[in-house]
Image 1 (tube, rainbow, N blue to C red):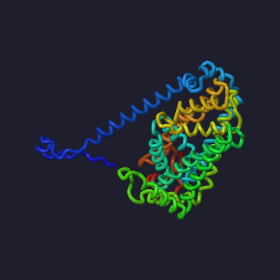
Image 2: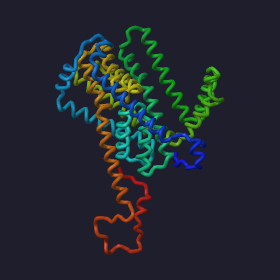
Image 3: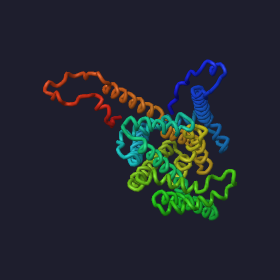
Amino acid sequence: MILRAEEPGTLADRQTGGDRRPDWGHSRVNRKWLQIALSAVSLGLAVALVVYLPQIVHTLTGATVSWHEIGRRFGGLGWQTIALMTLLWLASLLAYTYVMTSALPGLTHPQALTLNAAGSAVSNLLPFGGAAGVALTFGMTRGWGFANRPIVVYTLVTGIWNSLFRFILPAVGIACLLIAGKATNPTVAKAGWAGAVSILALVAVVAAALYWDRAAAVLGRALDRLVRLAPRRFRPAEHAASAAIERLRRDTAGIIHTRWAGLSLGMVAFLVLQCLIMAACMVATDSYPGPAETVAVFALSRVLTTALVTPSGAGIMEGGVAALLIGAFGQPAGGATAAAVLFGFWTYTIEIPWGGLALGGWALLRRREARAARPGTAPDADPDPDADPDTDTDPGTAAARPSRAL
């Protein structure tokens, strides 16, 4: 939106307040301060939840734990364990670049790594940080020469794949527990299987609708019928659900049809590596409950990161993970809480300085490119005396080409 300067008008208009226009600048300032205030409150809540984590764990489970004991667990970590966790973390970041490069053809893996790091840092610092991350994505990818439409499609496809796998994880966690025989009785087992199969069936229906026209039409008609059951005052327009599905398919079909394998394999590799980080945290703090339980705890941790009251569910995720390890799987309180905090470090805290470095490096390189492409800027080296004088050396030509640097 381009905000034009208010025309001065006549003296009578200014005196009588005629043709008054909204004070857009004042509104933008208010929104900015509101966002700053919400960010401060959200970050403060996250810090408070982590600081008072021992008390929260005691309230949820009745177990006693202190930061002194958690610190003692951290002090016992060997360099080999830290190196292993670092390698798993870096591998998980690399795995997710395959999701990003599949969703945005032409994006390189170094660019994807930079984009993911910068976006994660922003999302981890702001409540509802996903919107700020999308804005940053547009700014960075436009700077690399991508047009708006591929960026929009990239945002939609990665959002869809993240959501689908976030739904799948709880079903996988339940299934792992049931296969390992962790159900307390047959009734619980039947309910668990019913829930897991229902979740997977729902994901399969959505995936089919995204891939096949006929499946999309069937799902759209079913949703239209379901929407008609809503009260009239809350009911959307006729065929609104089917139209929304059709628009989504029209925007994403090209990428999903040709690159679904890369998207899915990259996401699976990313989640497996993150689960291995959690397992390493549990082993290092003497709170490893077993493979099936680890998958279940990991699934819960990913669900809790969607809590909106703190950035990426910080503080909430740690409390939920510790409570499940202690209350459901009988792990020692100190080790379980230390594992939760350690996993939070590898999936949340470290992304902030890492993303800051990536964003700073990108901004520095972009500034250098802009300075080099500025008309009248002479290169440091002397020109080649043998160069063809008819060769086009207009710096604007280079500036017009899409950049593929970081």
